[in-house]
Structures are given as structure tokens and as C-alpha cells.
Image (cartoon, rainbow, N blue to C red; front, side):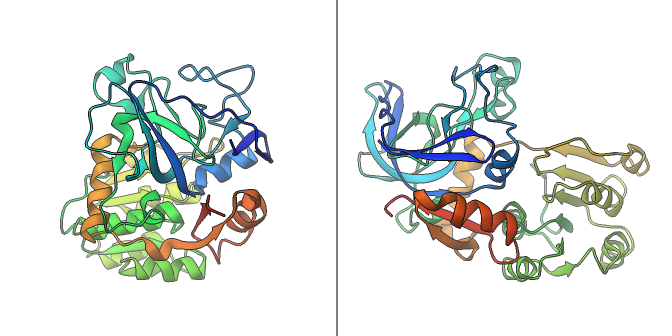
Length: 344
């Protein structure tokens, strides 16, 4: 079958002789239709972090590069394992949660499979990937899409309370998704710090109440001004740069929460006093649990989330680098989410 394989830094190859995976007894085989290019994919393209090397195969999949990539994907069901009990049928439209976990470590036993000691993702850690003609996933990670949700939309822990104010650092694909979730959860003021003009426009479209440009405005001072001098209850860092962490920590009010949503390529300076003074709480999120994934699909079905306008391009599998990765890296003003259309 056809698959886009990661052989190393900036080395992606479309291969046509990859063996089609066999559907396990507890798995569902899916024919991917659309695959989103994620910020993590861009990080891996430039510097491998998640993708296992020859020297260090992934502990669960036992695989190492080359691996098939693509972890944000939807598709149609090709086959259902013999031991799977589900209302999903062959031909149904589904979205796949790409979680890989050992199910044996302490975190997994506590139900926190997204924090597994051997955590990984289909499309990054082996076990196949969305950028292929077929991929198998555990039945518990395959979710039927509502009939009103098209497959291109199907590819898409802050503790926010209704009426809370929030500041979002960065309005890339993750930041825009966060903005929509904040709006759906009933946030009051949604303040967004972003430098790119087009992404500022997208942020406003998706529910931001105030747009700040960190190049020309004091984000910390402005956040406090907009919230009666206190600062918002929560800051979500979706930018992943040192300045955004510092700003997020200083912007929230006393006893406020800072949530790291970004993935980092390297260490950055961090002053703990920025959270100690004010007894603020800094936490991170990685991946999601099934209830989170199901919740997003339900929100899409009800119309609470409407991410259609985040899709700024659809490309073919043999043009992923030229028409996908390079524009997202070099032309951030123009693009938010580019999908690979596997029918092309």
C-alpha cells in the first residue's frame, strides 16, 4: 500500500510497497481520508523528538524510523476485529484518537493513559500512521462521527469555569482550537496574544474578545487592565517560546493557573518566582483521554465547535513537504491548518 514514511530529519518519502497492516482481534482497520498536519509534525520534520531512532525503538510498538507519519486523521472503516463489540460498522465515518500506551505502568493503572511512561502516538511512534491507505487502531480509540460532520472536519485540562477570563499565548492551530473551546465553555474575556495579522483575524473570528500584538503592546499590563487590575484566571501557552511562558506567568492573577499546551524543542530559562509570588499554578497537558476526544466530537456535532475555517488548504500525499510543511513553516501569515486529502 501507499504510505508517507519518515526516514530522518527533513527526509519524508512516499513509498508504494508498504505491507498493509492486519487487523487484530481488538482493533478496527480504517482507510484514512484526511490527515491534518500538526505543529508536532513540523517539530519532528526539523528535529526528531517523538519519532523513535534505530538505537531506541519505541517500547510499545517496538518500531523505529522509518515510520509512517500522520496522527490527526479521519476515515472510513475497512474491517472490525473479531473480538470487538461496537455499534460501528464497515463503511462508517470515524475519527481516530492516536494514543499509544502500555496499559501497565502506574499512570495507565490510574486511568491516565495520556501520561503513560511509554506514551506514544500512531503516526509518530510506529504502529502505522494516517498518511497511508490503511491503519489499525484499538477499538477503544475509534470514534464514529455524527452524520452532519464531514471527514475533513473530523480531524480536528485547563479547568475553565463559566465566566472566567483567559489569555491565550499564540493563535496557531492549537491556539485557535483552545479559543473555540474557551468560548464553548463560557469564558468571559478571551484575550489573545499573537503577532501574525492573519492569525489575529482567525482568533477574532473564532471568539477572541481582545487581540494583543506583543511587539507593540505590554501584554501583562493590558491583561490586568482588561480584568479590573487582577489579571485573568487562566493563561494557556500555545506559542512555545520563552517570552510567552514568562508573560503567561506574570499575566494571571494571584492563585491563577498557567497551562502549557505547547511542545518544546529545547530547554528555556524559567524563573520559579513568577509562580511562587502570587501562589500561581503551572501545569502541562499532553494528549487526551477518550472522554476528551468524545467530548470534542460531540461538540462538533452540536455546533458548539465550528473549526471549518481553520482549514486553509488541502493537498496531495506526494506534495506534503512542498505544499504542506514548507508553507506552514515559512508562511505562517497565510495558513492555519493544511489537510492531506488521500483521495488525491
